[in-house]
Image (cartoon, rainbow, N blue to C red; front, side):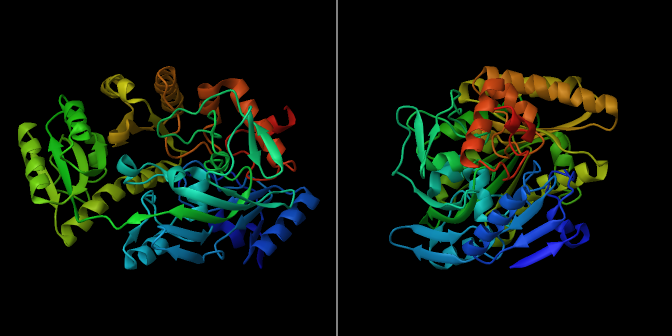
Length: 475
């Protein structure tokens, strides 16, 4: 096992894509197997040292940034244990990098549908955050594909959970020898990564998925797979205004003739973040990014839609070179936005809100009204196919920052009142505690803290993720 001491030795583990850097951790463990993980856990429990699990560093809410104590990275647990082509299943150690996994699967004609946009992420991190990626419009998030988890608890116990073997019953969720009370709140049945999952009759494994490393250290993951996807193409449709954007999105979502994998939205301001890389973007336009099955009949249908809705320009990636170029088009935006936040030197002020289908048109119009009235720089982009857009604010003064959070709250309150979530894909981490309480109330968040105390009685794992650590002494 590698052990590193001192901030200079571990600087690269003290940040993620959120720009949250409030860390005083000075020790890093890099174990090579589960036995060494247990050794680390026992040492930290004995010394009462907080322990933060560090993933690939692709998160946007400070989840892997340890405020203090020690860090454990599972990067050496990077073995693909088995791939079963007939059963369409794979067993992996938690530190397997998603890009490596996808390359191996491709050679066997298989695919892992919920792979995240940032493919340098670890599979264990994907599970801990219930990550979703560019194909979540069609395939959903990580939760749906996790079949087994093996994990270490701070009590030293190693347990396995298999989907379908343990369900909530009479208000209790079986977790190893524990019986965890089902919280009183309910997780919205939409794209959601807000706190611990809670639903009547839930599978026990779903309590761990999306728990942001606060309950256990995941060491192995088993996931279901599908056959390799058919040939696809990408189209970016540029529209002169957004008067018919929602109409076109609805049509695409409900058209049975189309096999659509991604459906994304870009406002004019977000497209400006791409113009240095793609100077041919038409000025002042809105865009829809679509990835779909490539067949002659479907291509004809897409061309018909672009003409009917008055597209001023259309980028098409129907060959390997242009397909990859448009993949870069999609990926470059969050990269450029995150770089801009770092340049401003501020933690991201970015709403990650999703709402039910019926509530989305009103939520979208609410965003656009704010943008029309607000002088502060804002952009709106993201997963419109899942009623989930990223509304980013770029405050440059203390007054603008205060106003940004006030507007953020108004957006969140509106969404929650209509059955939405304040965290659709990026989780809560250390920077969205207040929004989680807005969603579930003080009672709901305290119930989460009580669950953590039951499963992690040492109260050491990933402190300050989901809720502030002070709450643990109050429940």
